[in-house]
Amino acid sequence: MNGSETAAKWDMPGNGIAPGVWPTMVTPMTPGGEIELAGLESLTEWFIAREVAGLFAVCQSSEMFLLSLSERVALAECVVRRAGGRVGVIASGNTAWDPEQQIEELQAMAATGIDALVLVTNRFAAPEEPDAVWQNRMEHVLAKLPPHLPLGLYECPHPYPKLLSLELLRWVSSLGRFSFLKDTSCDPQVQRERRTAVEGSALGLYNANSATLLSSLLDGYAGFSGVMANFHPELYVWLCRHYRTQPGEAAMLQDFLGAASVYERQLYPLNAKVQLARRGVFRHSGARVTAEQTLGPSQLIELEQLARLQDRVAALLPGLEVRT
Image 1 (cartoon, one colour):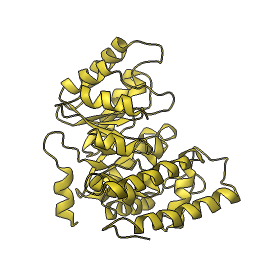
Image 2: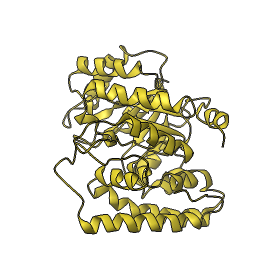
Image 3: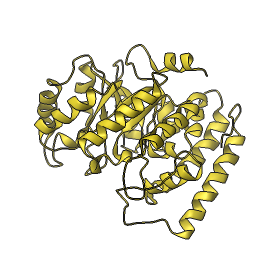
């Protein structure tokens, strides 16, 4: 796929966000926790070479809750600049609780040139507060954002998961401003109900959960936006493209992706950074979120085994070139 074809793919009519894989990008850092923009540029190229639909440049995987606003803005600007229109770039970053601080954060992120601004759902209401509170705060923030910039929603699990009710989903989809939802429900029944709730709207649903990905695609989800795309994005790309035409291979691949996703619970994002550094994507594997932790000898061996196994799985998929 050449650059013009890639650009045409993400510039979709309707919601402007391409179906397919949107990796939640990690942030390359030195052992001391300093951001390496050169490594981020290399990571951007690595994902584009694997034909992802777009890049989620600032999110929890990026350690956004441990980054300053200026650092979050720098990440988004770097990915936008390096992508150069070849794929879409979206970013979040409203980590504050105060609505006025969130508006400042979101306006700064909107000015970076991203293709959609993604709002963190748990920033608009505490766990015990009703939907009406969430909607009122959302309306206040929306009034301060650029009216023509596509928006998204991110059910970030930190500091607590705020899953949108079907009523809230119907409301946000009726606004015509939202193009993307990173769904963290991890529940096929909820996913089916959500797909029905947004039917006919511009809101595309992107599953963050590897184990339920195939079933969600069959139910009409637009793609995948999850952490495991940092390990083997080409496998997720293949599944999103061929799940209907190659059902047998898709089922086999789903079994592997679901089983491999247990690595999410093994000092992520440190383990993803170690794997990417091993593959030569960037130099260092520093992380602020796990600054005092390291992977043990057994965990490092397990990552080596995962790398070999994912290559064997890739070799079984028609038309997929195994990349080092």
